Length: 118
Image 1 (spheres, rainbow, N blue to C red):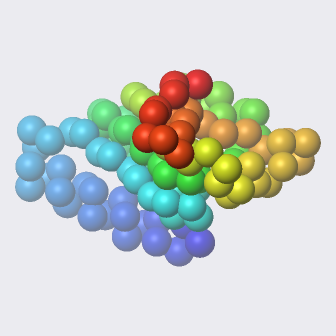
Image 2: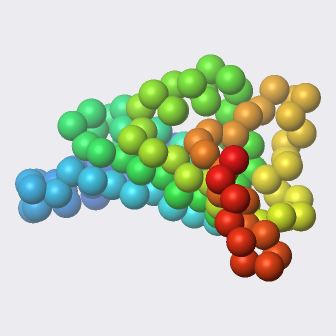
C-alpha cells in the first residue's frame, strides 16, 4: 500500500521543505493499520531525507517488521512512540512468534486514564 503513494509523499515533503527551508521536522502518525503505514513512512522519510528530523507516533499499531527492521528504524528516526490501549488486540498482531516486532517505546494507556511507559 505504501509504495503506491511513496513518490507522492516524497515530492510533497520536498516541496514543503523548499517553501519552508527552516522547517526540518516531520511527524508521521496513524491509527491501527494507518499506524503501521505511518511507521513505514517515517522510516522511509528519515532515510530519503537525511537532513530531516523524523518522529513517529502511532495509536493501536500492529507489529510492522522483523528485528532487522526494528533496529534500522530505531537508528533512523529521532523518536517513535506507540500508544497502546490495554486489551486492544491489534497491537498483539501479527503474533510475536511470526518474527514481527514493534518499533519504538510503548506508552500503555490504562482504562482508568493512567499512562505507563514500557
